[in-house]
Length: 634
Image 1 (spheres, rainbow, N blue to C red):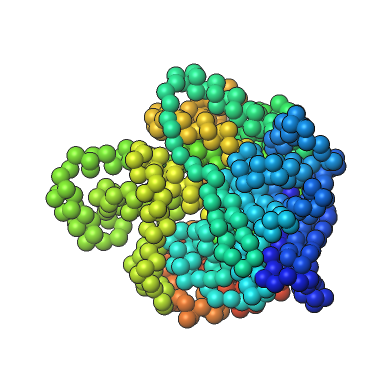
Image 2: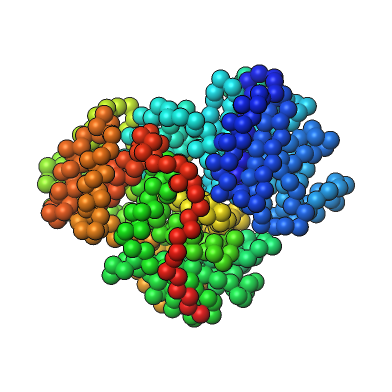
């Protein structure tokens, strides 16, 4: 696990002393991604910098790593879980290895197969490979976007990095598309960022880049569905075997491995399977004092029944707000998912005991776990209604006041899926953004993001379409982004066994009626977990990662929110009167505006950090060493 930064130079020349120092300063910004080691390589064409977090210590192979008499140079961020099997296969073909590292396996495979090698990698990765003979730079990102990958074109050349902040020397122009999309999605959808000059390499993509030529990007992996018919018993056996193997491979490490544990099925199943290979595995949970907003009690009960240690932590409203600037700095772009904060705290606690943690990200997207996946069935009645009548119902819904019972049902039932569903979160509608934003562009409507994906998956059942949209947007834009950034903030490596190539190959074959069935979600996964996961987990309602901001914004956090709105230098971007009205209506219980307010507040905080320079970056970058209220449960 590591972080990297690279520069493919526009001109053939070595960096001057001041330029080299600037490059090393950019690398030092991401010390948290790799506190154990640092390395650099430079020739007249390229410079590569690397920070390493040591996970497998046996002859790991320093990076940047040279191969084949220094023809190839590689840096990569991630872990390749099938590197042992790949190395054995290459050895059978006569290839010798100087190290036991997955780094050398990647570059050896690349030297033999070229860009086709990326399809064989089972793991999470962002990779840069420089071929000195061909004078060509290659890069690749894992199929689901578990690890980040940013790049930026400049006069000096093209920069590549694990974090966007390494590419920013001063404030640059806000991306208007990113701005508008953020206020709908609660994140900036890939491949763009909130900075006009910086983009992201998309998941499942590799690129080819030669000096003074444009980047050529190629998709090597595209998620799809290909359902098959098996009995429930057969599905259960397949799921158990595939997940068990994935968890086993994800536990390859020479350092302590733990696991996050919430009150849900996903993390509980991961812990139960991991315990077979690591009986003393430690688990970590967080929650809040607000009633109904903590799963700690459930996690403790689960840990007791599974026979594992559990460490839990209660987050107060005060420290929640206190850590927000540091969290937003780590995120690079604004992200309005309140679950970022508990994830930050649970990662902080886990790092005191382990260097690697397992987590359940991806299960909902692959196995159909979100409650909104019930919607196509609940709206099925509209399929038999004539178009003329549906148009009339749509007009009625449009004129009904907000909050009137039935308005949402009529609106959703008379709106085609591709127009109404953009992923698991929708904050502001286009009409609302037109009022909120001082500059609103009709060409940047949020449907522009999802339309290409619907075009690719349009013949699939509605639930599969929704899963596909979530995989292509929500999963990489929110779930995996916060998972990577919040754990790496504490130099903690996160591994996600559900987002394994073999697990996906199985999940894509499961029919909708095996996922959304018996009045629940992830039905066939629940059946597979029965007998492995305690029943109290399987039979409870899904909560996700609940955060009591709805209550806090009326009480504990009201003054903080009001001050942030007043002090934020965003009058040229946002209409503050609209925001004050949202806050007032929320506090008067006219409507729940908490998520919309949080979306605005997180943008304002991001603006203070990255545009207004209101915070001391060295303070934000400093390691978090505050004392914690840690409770251990055996």
